[in-house]
Image 1 (tube, rainbow, N blue to C red):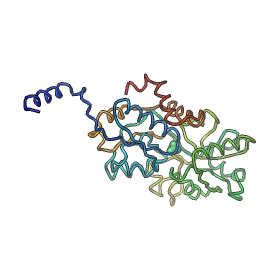
Image 2 (cartoon, rainbow, N blue to C red; image 1 turned 180 degrees about the vertical axis):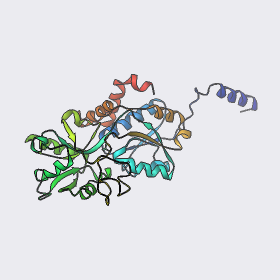
Image 3 (tube, rainbow, N blue to C red; image 1 turned 30 degrees about the vertical axis):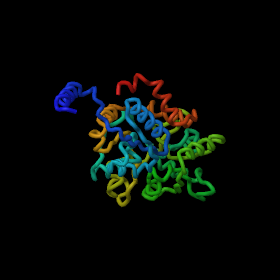
Image 4 (tube, rainbow, N blue to C red; image 1 turned 90 degrees about the vertical axis):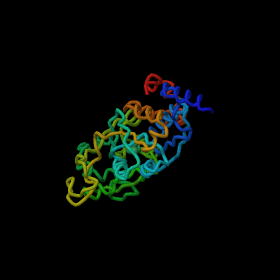
Length: 310
Ligand code: TMO
């Protein structure tokens, strides 16, 4: 290329900054975890990027370790940073540097001990945690002996159920479900004869439309309850509070994303899903039994007016 054409091209590029596609052709790496809304939402966002001409790669990763991967740039972003489950890992990675907050979804989240409403017939003092504890024998199983069973989420969600039981002196034993599907199967089995059950659950989720229920009310979350034993009702223990009842749902990205894929980054910054949209994404997989990629395509087709704005 001679100097003359080079000048013209540079001049044209300067005149059309938005016409030029500035993003790297390297794949944007999107992490996939083990609950349905996150998997579908990640595919929705990946498919939007692809429609815009980006390349995308999905990797299945641990939902806590992912913050370290985003910080290092091995993974480009995270679509669902739940305050209750991942706030601590996210904050730790933020402090080390390399990733940042790309804003909140327009959603309010809660993750905690939960029961389907028929449980309250047997234990009318609910939702108080003290009443639950007084009813512990109702939740006993062969596995937990005389203690009540609390079916917690998969281990990598790091809900600290065991620490909470110890900190509050509860007569419960924590059993970790192997998968989210195992939680739904346990609720479904209890539904048959309306036996009392208490499990880890969250909102937004499909479950709220299927089984009316309530979260157990633990001592109210106070900032620092997971870091400073003095915070919360037990002065010598961590995790003696419930999870935040009005938690955030954030997006996070590797710091390098905005320079390497500026167009995709601008889209990511605009993306915001609501509670009903997130619950619907979970339902498409957990109730309608769609494959996540298929659910994502269907969602995009039905919600063009929503995502074209982004
Ligand atoms: C992280 N989760 C939404 C499953 O609680």
